[in-house]
Length: 168
Image (cartoon, rainbow, N blue to C red):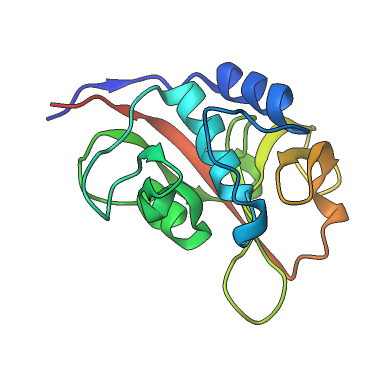
């Protein structure tokens, strides 16, 4: 059984504020290849988790712009990785309701009838949590402290990070 360590939410949020309006040169920018939102969210998550899952294809890892897992840059793959049932290394969590959302968690937005296509990190949550007082940071349309209700989303789901499994 892998050891579970706490997720450092403050480190993830600090990273989000630092890089919301610029690009960390250690990572490739996917702005011209469909968007950089999940790449940015993965960077933020890694800043607070410190552990990747190097499982080919189904893991969550980044080596270079063309050597990374689909979950590092793809909204649905990120969701599938975070909510996985396998006890592999890296951050893990669950889809949750708005009342349990915390800074360092993630929102995923669906704009039309298709798939969820945007994945900002939550940086602030009001009391009680509502789309008006949940603030996010994101890439693609760069933002920091953006109210979640300013997105024209048809549906929002929330991913609550529970912890990080260390490699066995």
